[in-house]
Image (cartoon, rainbow over all chains, first blue to last red):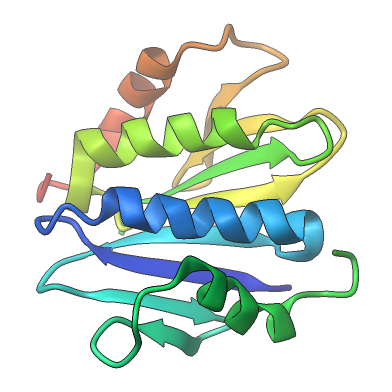
Length: 80
Length: 80
């Protein structure tokens, strides 16, 4: 069971960015992940978690979709 | 807590359709939903659930993004 969460700031207009991350992860891993959840938030949040472990936080990391996909990879099941 | 699930068939190439539904729901309701999860599946599945209640199943309903959004609406919190 691999669950990825992309929590994004709704009022900041980060939906498109969250969708780009979601799409990249699902295209790369398919059924290797169980789900990618787009979680609504505010206050500037943009955090990606894989199985509850933070793999990207925009307050600490530079935004790079490929880097986020790579950071998710160790959490992906063997069925990918 | 409103959770919407979009379960889609990965090998059938339904990711784009699942993303269209996810985007329409999140654009409409924003923080009125807590999350929209894209759930990977196979065997032709395309089902949308709101708080575990099936609101769309492609084996029974005609695909219509606007109709799916309307079906989710009764499940949306008052913060929308």
